[in-house]
Image 1 (cartoon, rainbow, N blue to C red):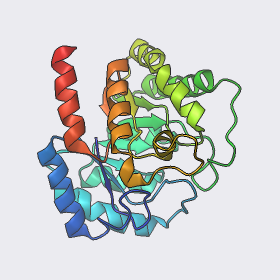
Image 2: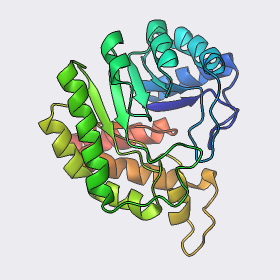
Image 3: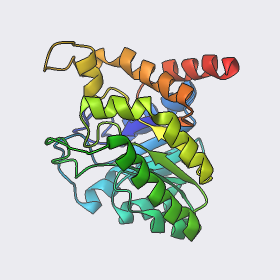
Image 4: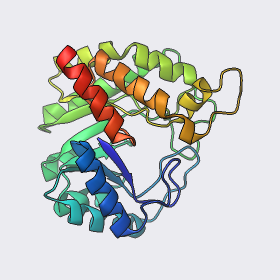
Length: 259
């Protein structure tokens, strides 16, 4: 899944593709690099990000989805049902839902649904997140939501542990270490699979700057992004959400035959 943020303030590529023509061109580039899905988002979900009005988000994502429809499978990254519905009508077939609340929209529109775990909201999710058992709490939440959606008739459900969404570096690493357990639970429910998004995130910057409280710059996180994407594949994830499509696709092709 290639990331296409049509926003001014996303943590890595904010402002690069706010213009519709630039966004469409980048989407086509990601397709040429081998992306199976393009995930179009019009509202940043980085820590501290503010919400935007529905009409603003619609104006950002719908022209891009309409222009790319028919060239590749499209996903919409949104917490707003109105945006999800309009995006599906414009050509998206997957709702990437960090709110974990839109299964009814997926059911009504016939789209797939990615249910992600997030502690809190983007504005405050990184303010000292605490869990008793992060693996049990996150995985139980996701599989519970997936079960509800599948029982209701949603045909395609992915589960995403929400790396970086209300988690410390230790929480993130623990979730990645235990990913095979989520893969097994998702398979037992007949989910489509597990999706993982680590690309360019802050915890990778901290790992790249050992002993420092200041993470390495986002431009210095490519190696960690690729390493964690491969680790997710090895653990059984069926989808990785990335900014750097070409090297990740190459890694996937190398891993696939070996597996």
